[in-house]
Image 1 (cartoon, rainbow over the protein chains, first blue to last red):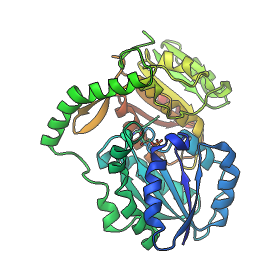
Image 2 (image 1 turned 135 degrees about the vertical axis):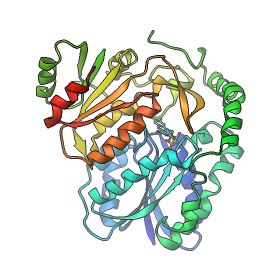
Image 3 (image 1 turned 180 degrees about the vertical axis):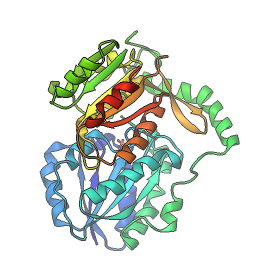
Image 4 (image 1 turned 30 degrees about the vertical axis):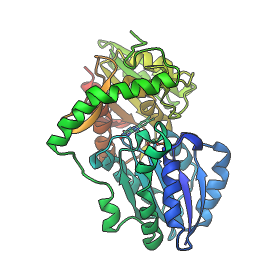
Length: 216
Length: 166
Ligand SMILES: Cc1cc2nc3c(=O)[nH]c(=O)nc-3n(C[C@H](O)[C@H](O)[C@H](O)COP(=O)(O)O)c2cc1C
């Protein structure tokens, strides 16, 4: 199989969590001979090449950060320039997000089915997983712990051409966190996370409190 | 205050709206002719310049009004079963209204909001789309900003939409 992979993040490649995820994912995907070409929607100079790859190939994988419960505006702008294919082309998706629970991504996942139909293609499933916000902001080793599990999912994709297997479905983790976990995380958010965020913000030169209100 | 953001280039709908909402306090932004880009995901609005977007374009006009609005109505064209990218950009660029801080609201994670004011969302579409999906999506989008959806209306349903504006 040869897959066309499109990173749908508006963030430039170097800073994109989706790109870090794809790095691990493609390592698994290529283990048994599957090949791929990868593009970034964030780079408008690539748009013509992405269109060409979309029209000429039958296995498309679009990797997407959830943006306000659906796909990012920039990805939508690109997709609006495509003509529907109406052939046997299959599109599979990786949908990843900041919030950690599976339920947060379901509205976005539903849209991907609608989108596939509009593009005249066949839906090959979505790999759904949250809790990816930190990848860009933490040290490489810590980020690796978040991204490493995607390697196995790459193997699965190469095997089945999609994400419909039980293994891929289980990859999402819990739909909703249990009550004790919510209580514990509530404390983490209120106490430790705040100081962690402050440290990151000072690192990028921020001098204001993170809840500063510029328009009042 | 009711904020109406028209991302289409057709101003006949907003003319119509103005005529029928004289008694209401509304503020119309014709965004169709404005320079408004997409969110680039830099996260500066959370971490470097809290509450402020690093993309310096006409969106700031909308953001400044939105933080004081009781309702935000977006008029958007559609594409691929959804609102088009111009409409979606309006929502993506609202990220500065949330802070980076997290909490649980009900059973789900949400961001702590920057301002006390909660802005409810209404949507008027001028083209064909999966309306049932849009209804679901708008509810979720509003939930993210601690508010509620006022519904999705086709342009032929303008009277119904106006009836919902408080
Ligand atoms: C404008 C914007 C909107 C977002 N909306 C959501 C959302 O609705 N739910 C969520 O869980 N994460 C949301 N996120 C978080 C991203 O999905 C997450 O940080 C992702 O890992 C970014 O991937 P990237 O670096 O490849 O762009 C949003 C981020 C941005 C910048």
